[in-house]
Image (tube, rainbow, N blue to C red):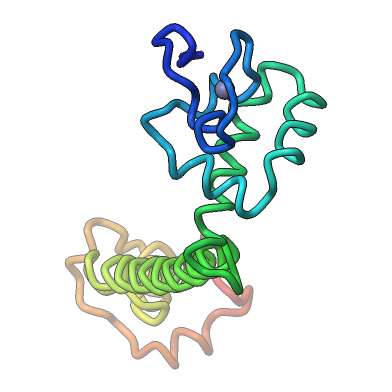
Length: 172
Ligand SMILES: [Zn+2]
């Protein structure tokens, strides 16, 4: 905590209120003389006596955060008397929503792109190709031709189906 009392110069609060800045001034650590607007804004919006009350109710380690919050809110309220810091919060919330939508769209594009690549990358083997190759393998085994598949198909598939009483190739 920087105390302006060590520089023998009144803190910004005491200077603004035209009073003597005594050692142990409650404002001194938070309102250094080089930031006169900080106290002026806080005083204008919240009032010096309210700030004193607030500081006295807080634990010392909470005071700096509280004063910085008051200073932020006061500055925003001075700049935008109607909405204050709500306008900044609203603006940032809209930005977060917009960026979230952009992120969702980018993720959806990525998923679409990845799934398109997965389908086209390996050699195309659709369900029909798999089915017919299993069909050929089963037939070759049954007919003793299971040695590399070099033999031409001996019978048309329909006639094989007719000769297959066990059905469904369950004996593979
Ligand atoms: Zn002071």
